[in-house]
Image (tube, rainbow, N blue to C red; front, side, top):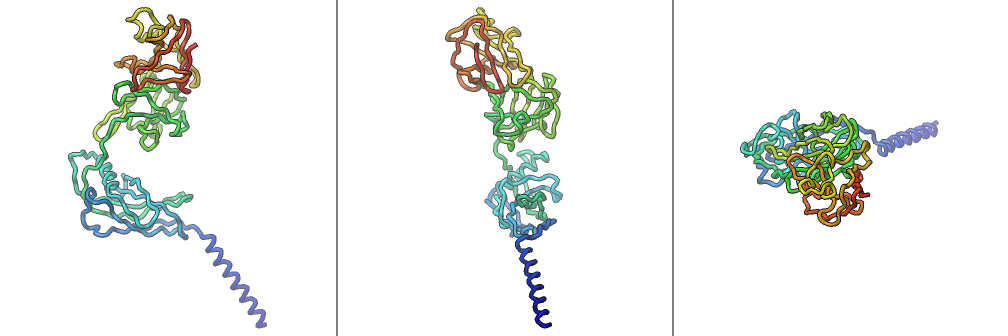
Amino acid sequence: MKNKIFTLLLAGMAIFSSCDSDRDSNPVYNQPETFTLNKPALSDNIFDLNSSSHIWLTCSQPDYGFTAAVTYTLEISLTDDFEKVQVLPTQFTTAKMEVKTNELAVCATNLFIAEGKVKDDFPLQTPLYLRLKAVVTDLKEPVYSNSIEIKTELEYTLPPIEIPKKLYIGGDFCEWNWDNTLEMVPVNGTEGMFWRVIYIPENSSIKLSKTSTEETSAGFAETTINDNYEAVVTDNSGKIGFTKGGWYLLVVKAAIEGAELRYTMDINEPAVYIVGPVTSNNESDRFNVAPEKKFTVPVNGDDFFVSPPFKFGVSGDPGVRACVSIDGIDWWKTEFMVFDGILKYRGNDGDQARVSANAGQKLYINFTAGTGKIE
């Protein structure tokens, strides 16, 4: 009998041991509701964000039921309800964080600018509210810490806004892959002005960006739209939505308004013209844009724009010339030409090389592929 009891006890111990082992190797995920962000040392003092380099923050890791690799981002707000927030660009992977005061100052300045403050309102003393957002890879739900208040001295801390030297278009046409954006063409010698002939599918959207990344993109709210070609533009979740699909000449002007970079976009007829001596023997008529010099516009996005037949052949200077037409802009500031099958824009560069041709030939331009030919 004693042997049987001893055997049962051993079996029971083995079962409990097995269960403990399972818990260790297969932890049960727990969704924490919050975690603790500690107030920094001397938090009752006033932090001068522009004279110090950093603030140390610490927190307790959220209780996920196991030790997890957590990524923390710091959010700041002017109010404890965090209705309007700015997120610091630096992320953290440990519970002790060296927060750059310059990043705090930039985010705080942006919050005040959004509230209507201007540069002359600075410096100022203000409380800032901080909280952490914790994220674990493959877990969908972020966890937010409690908020803490710090008192700060804040100077105006925004980098000077500059008119972009380049401008890009991203959108549904490139499946929002910012590696495949279209670079707009600078209007020669005209700061902040760009153009592009582009095919935009029906019920699709675009955004502008001063870099070929989404981080600097601007949409409907940041852009004044002048729809001159019945594109029927809408605000599509912050993007610039085109109801009518087709070819457009987009002309964009960048300007600084207050502390913001804003854009004006003219949506125009995709009017492309052949100019120069291939069009006329009369010097006064060679370089004007006229209906009889206009390219035919293809139906599809992958087809060629086709010029009228050349009336005269040319060899050497001044050669075959082509451009788009923008009100108030000389034709040569928007010209382009095909060289060895490749479409090249003049942009802000100097005069392009000359291309010869025979009477009766035509210039073919594929704006989507960036190619062309004369035949």
